[in-house]
Amino acid sequence: MKAYAIFPAFELYGDDVPAERTQASISLIAKMTFDSLRSGGDVFQFVVDWRDPGAAADAGHFHEDLAEPHLIPLLSEEDLLDRIRRSIDPNAVCAGTVRSAATCRAVTFGWDGQAFICLRHEDKAPVSPDATLAVVSSEPDLFTETDYFDGWIRD
Image 1 (tube, rainbow, N blue to C red):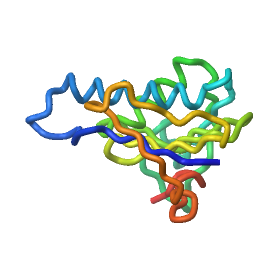
Image 2: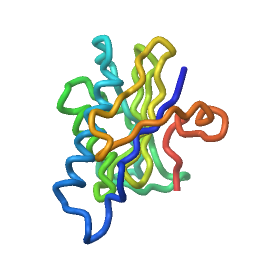
Image 3: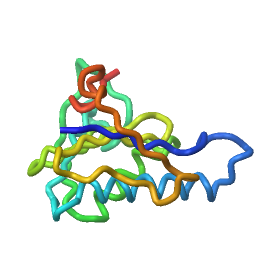
Image 4: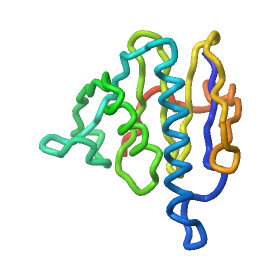
């Protein structure tokens, strides 16, 4: 497996950043992530949503001693793209590690619009078509220095 990070090319926050540019960056990163996960026709993505009993789906914070896992299939293009887009948007409450049950591809998300993607060795690296909105870097140390692909870090 190999890892990549897709970052916004600018801070998504601030009064000096037009909302249109922020949304364009979020959309581009979401599309690049979606294309990487769905490469070769892979349509078996899922996410585990940890939530306290009685809490709404994608509630955000939860308690480790109370939370229960809920498997959410992201089999349609719309479901997967919506989940990715909301996970990239720093103003939305949605995250978790999206995994493929077929290929082991995975993506997890940073707090400021980043997508961290785990791909197979034979997969092509993501490429940004617009470096003013998003940049890609190879991150081989993500596997040894973090637990990004082990699932959600619980509160």
